Structures are given as structure tokens and as C-alpha cells.
Picture 1 (spheres, rainbow, N blue to C red):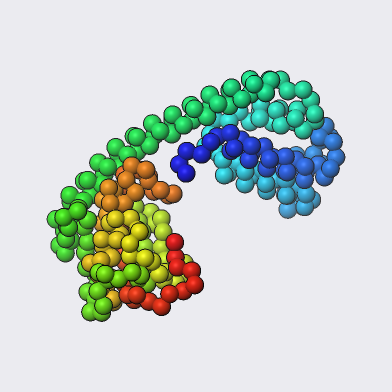
Picture 2: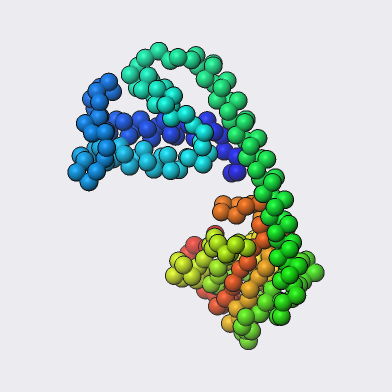
Length: 253
């Protein structure tokens, strides 16, 4: 889900912070100072737990809450933890949270639009130049591919499942997924993948290795995916190990 509500994120931060302070205070009242203002290897286990939860929480949410006022966050947290009356009514807090969520979503939408335009231009330029390179072929759909190693085994076309090794990269060389890194091939359904990947698989035979250059409209388009920005052109190295292999209990997703 691309646009998760910001309110649950705040609740998650508050919950983790509650755990952190609770651990750090070891059940003592929150008006008591922590036994240490810094955390080192010599700190108590509860101090380390508190610090670890706090650090992990901030690391997880710093991008979505990049303008969070830490001073007032701490103030609100401590007031609630001490049972003090809130400085704002629940209605006021809900109103400001709703406005903040709308603001963040609008900023995210604008950034996605800008990224989509930039990535589309970069992808078009790459594909235009790549199409001129030796060995690169372009299909009617716009998919580009290069045969790194021809195969002599069974063709994929018409098959339901394939066993492959693969590596997916962005144009800047960033690897976003790789069976090689995981140390074992995977079994995929030929259909049901992104269109460019499915089309590329159907061109292959058992024993072949191809490089696929997939335009954004044959990949994740303007939506993008985890680790993949909107309108990203993708590059896959695919090694076709086996066509219609013996199925495991749980195929790869």
C-alpha cells in the first residue's frame, strides 16, 4: 500500500516509545530521571533495550516523519505517561493530525509525479541508446532483450512454471532483487508476473541466459513498487534452469 495512513504511524512510534521508556525506567515513575544520559556497553540491559527500541523506531519512521518536532513529541508522550491533562483536546489533536496526514500525502503525490517524469525521461533515453547496441533486440511491445547464452532445451512458451536464477537492477545499477544473493534459484509461474518479465521468459529455452530491458509500462508503471520508483525502467538477468520443474510445496511469490 503506497499511502498508508500517517495516524497509525504516529501510534506505532508512540507505542514503541512507550515500551522504550517503560523498559528504561524499569517500572519506576516517569518523573524519575534515567540512570544514565548515555548508553554504552556498560549500561544495564533495560537501558540498552530502551535505546534499541527508540533507535529502531526513529530509523524506521524518519523518512515519513522527517519534520517531526521531537521536543513536543517527548512533551506529549511524557504528559500522557504521567497521566497529566493534555494540552490539546482530542478533537484538536484529531484535526491537526488529519491536516498533517493530508499535507504529507499531498507532498508524497507531488514527489511521485516529479519522480515519474524524471524516471520516464531517463528510461526513454536509456532504451533509445540501448536499442542501437549489438545483440539487443526490441519486440513489438517495446521490450528489449539480449541473448547472453542461447539455450537448446525445452522452450518456455506454453509452460506454466519455470525454475530460474535472476537479478533485477535499476538503471543506476542498484540491485532490488536477486536469487543469486539468496543463494538458490526460484520457481516462478510464467504468467502473472509483470508483463515485460513474462514476455521475456516466453522467448527463452531451457539452458539459456537472457538480459531483459523492461520499459516502465511493461513493469510497475507510474505506481512503482517497494524499492522501485514510479516509471522505472528495469534490467533483469535471467538464467533459465528448468522448464516445468517438479513443484515444491510452496512456489515462489
